Length: 54
Image (cartoon, rainbow, N blue to C red; front, side, top):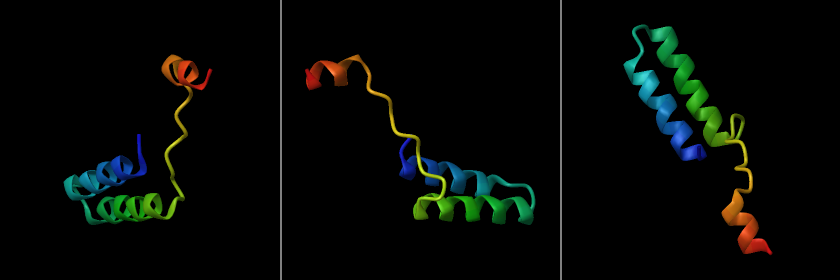
C-alpha cells in the first residue's frame, strides 16, 4: 500500500469515526503517514521484478 493510499484510508476512518477523539487520532495518523512516520512497507520483489532484473 502506498503512503497516499494509507493517508486516504486514515482520513476515511477519521471522517467515519463515531467520536471526536477517534477522529483526531486518525487525522494525526494520516499526518504521520505524510511525514513518513508510518510509511508503507517496501514491496517484496515478485517473480516479475526478478525476471526484469536478470
